[in-house]
Image (cartoon, rainbow, N blue to C red; front, side, top):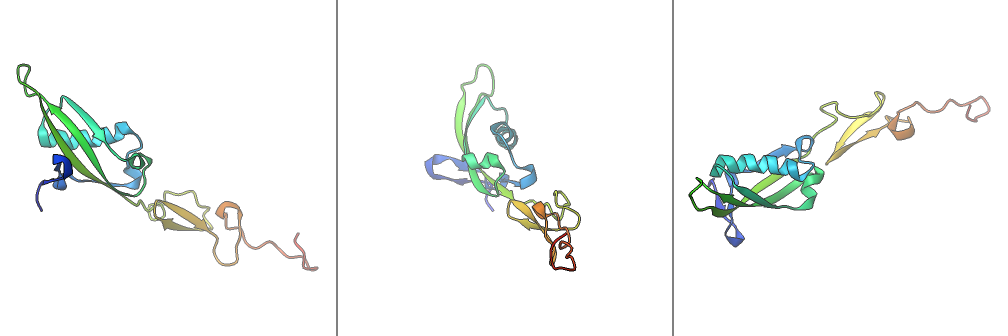
Amino acid sequence: APRHASAAGGCEVLVEDAVLLSQKDAPRSLNDIALVINKVLAHRVGSLTSVEYVYPGTIVTGAVGSWDVTAMVEVQEGPDSPSTKSCYVVPFQVVDYDECAANDHSCHPSTVCRNTEGSYECTCPGSSFGVHGSGSPDPPQSSRGGLF
């Protein structure tokens, strides 16, 4: 695969420098995105004077999906050197984190944890019921057929 490709608008797409994170490690703020992207750019272009980002807002929610983060980069090699500006696109992908498999959920021990894209659900097994997936057994029946 090529290390980079051209995108619309003359930006260089950094294919091999694509960022892949689990949902648990996904950015939750612009600062988080900047830290990740700056690391990619510093590796690629060296010392950064300034960086402007263009990104979809949903990326900071930790949502599962793929996005392109565009970075307008200014680099100055030395104090007497003129600065140069470049545009890069860093592909960014957030994949689902399986809270159930990692035992990183708040389901009651008597329930079944089921992973969903971006979250999980707690379900009661069989004929059990419960509040918020607590998995309590069926309510006891009195001899008159009513509930205790």
